[in-house]
Amino acid sequence: MKKLVTLFMVTVLASMAAKTVLAADTLADVKKKGVLVAGVKDSLPPFGYVDEKTRTIVGYDIDFINAIAKKLGVRVELKPVTSASRMPQLQESHIDIIAATMTKNPERAKQVDFSHTYFFTGQKFITKKGTVKSLKDLEGKKIGTAKGSTSEQNVKKALPTATVLSFDDYPQALLALEQGKVFAVTTDEAILAGILAKAPNKARFEIPRVQISDEPYGLGMRKGDKRFVDFVNKTILDMEKSGEAARIFNKWFGPTTQFHLQRNFKITAGK
Amino acid sequence: MLNYQFDWSTVTSGKYFDWLASGVKVTLQLSALSIVLAFILGLLIAVMRMSNNKPVRWIAHAYLEFFRNTPLLVQIFFWYFGSYKILPTAVNDWLNSTNFEFAAAVIALTIYTSAFIAEDIRSGVLSIPKEQMEAARSAGFSYLRSMQYIILPQAVRLTVPPLVNQFLNLAKNSSLAMTIGVMELTYQARQVESYTFKGFEAFTAATVVYVAISLVITALVNIYNEKVLNIHKAA
Image 1: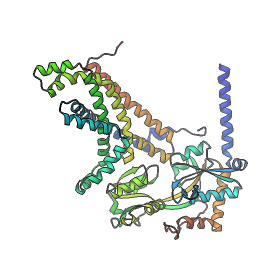
Image 2 (image 1 turned 135 degrees about the vertical axis):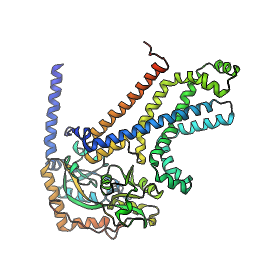
Image 3 (image 1 turned 90 degrees about the vertical axis):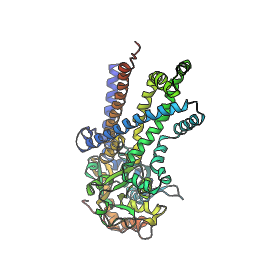
Image 4 (image 1 turned 120 degrees about the vertical axis):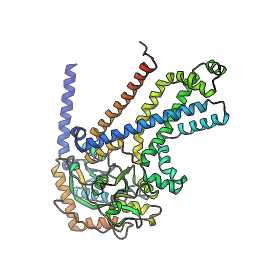
């Protein structure tokens, strides 16, 4: 019996060691497998969502993954993740990279290595038309957002007197706004624009020019996987240089889309 | 999983501990208030359900079937979002200026649980021989007084074990209140997870607290059994 236990322990330790070695070099691993497995959102247009016609996941995040895979010469496998599941999935090596609207922050950077910022947005509000001119108008009010996001802390910092209510998802937050249960709904502008575009009576709402935080999105990779991080960073920097990154932005957010966003950032090293 | 680094300090001190602690407070308030109200309402419904008055009995029966057979989550949404459509604007404005999230959660938990409690109490009452009621009535007690002095004191005693189940369910069901923005324990655990990715630690802490709350409820009822009702556990 004792022998058996020892054998079991040794096996477990050996497999742990093997796994750690594998995990540390995703680049070689992905090339060997011939497939890059990416964790993406599948219900958050236009970052990642299921296209009605083709029944495949498409979006801004997915185009970046495709470009990285193309450079690697491997095919892409997309795995839908949620804000809550994306980290465990990466750490357990179910996915190789996260491209799921993930805001870079120091807390998260302890768990994951981020690429350079590939999308830049800021946290804003949706309100009923004409109710908010400046941040002052939001003081002491109830403000809605969705769970699993970093939006809540940003509001608490910018508006200490406000009460923040986190709903399960944005449609409920918008319903609460419509019923006057909250005075504003807050999250990243790019997501707000998507919500507003889909809202049934969008003429009654607006996104005032009040911004409370910067939200840089990064691609997430396993901690300490330097070769892979360098490769991804170089790829997206090249995409910026060639103009491909700007093309992808305009394809999903530009003037021809329902979002009408201006690209106010560039992918640069050191950010 | 194998590469996961546990870091318990995330949830045992500092900002995230404060979040979880405030969540525990809200969960306790939510559960305690709802347990008291659900018990009172459940008792009332049980008495109505057994009344000799047909319309009263029918109303109680309809109440039971409706609230026992719809999901709690739907009821929470109904009280929070659905009530908006049927209430006048002035009332809505007033509600929205209060902590209506908490109130809606208490209403939903109370009404949902009261339906189960009423049935538990009724089964307790039915197990009391009906001659006792007849004896009480012939001794000059009214129906309500017979219930109050003779039947219910005996029935509640028999009902204690199933009531504990309902209380425990209620304490755990209170986590559904997070769907309408009540910042209770599960809500805070999820917040901690989304800020730090320390989900295992946050939810382990929450689990420990739920187990502790459940054990305290069970212990309180056991004390009540022994000291007040003088029921001693069978050897």
